[in-house]
Image (cartoon, rainbow, N blue to C red; front, side, top):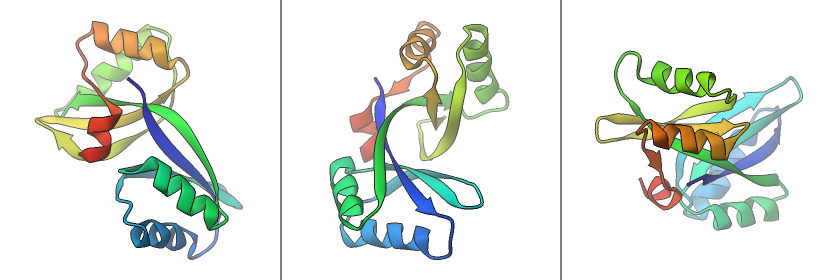
Length: 143
């Protein structure tokens, strides 16, 4: 029930993000969600795309350092307290959220959030037992 995310390590300088998006655009890879974390010297661009293999290949061929990691996509009620209820149940189960970011579309009346957990299988179990919908990778990439 985990999905795949691509992480690209970038120098923190003007034009590097544009270079990545240009390569993906030229190769018809669609970005579905993204997050950028940075320091003064480098950044990490995390992407959910519609074609992971192609994105990894074209970015590596362009000289970028690319890593695939597993994340969990979760439907969150799009209302006040929706995200809190998810985070609270994870906290009560002793599961740490390493990072999270929002997806670009909704699923019905729910928002979609991307999570990286310290215990992904346990997080999936807790969420499933509490009737929280996990979005399968194949569905996520095509949303």
